[in-house]
Length: 150
Image 1 (cartoon, rainbow, N blue to C red):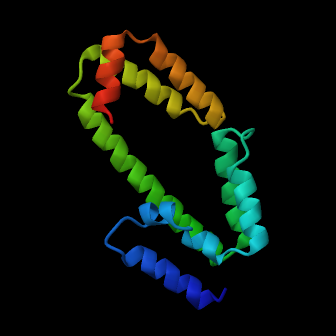
Image 2 (cartoon, rainbow, N blue to C red):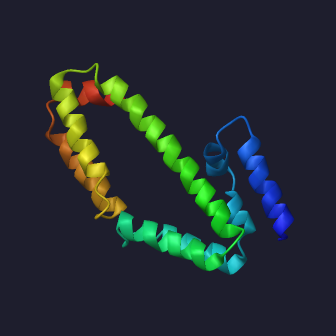
């Protein structure tokens, strides 16, 4: 794939009125379009490795993008920046919703966010720990929290 095509893809992603991450979550992200078959294979293996902690996966993918060089690295950096921006917006939206809930639901949310912000665990461990935390809640608090945050 030519450098100008990758730049065109990146420009298209950045100029769209919708979020580029949301578009690329549905379609193949621009950085993967720009990657070679071998690079895509390595990315998919890293991304899908259930044995890596979230922190290890972040570092491995960052190093992968660095090794790929440009345009992949630049497009990956833009993708991750947009993804982080969207995550911060979602966190703010959720905080506003949770602030209106009972103190018990707010405390439960705080515990769940503590679990999900811990990067020294695998995705499976995180999901298990969140499920355990939610299962400990009284039904009223569980329903209040889960229905309010959908």
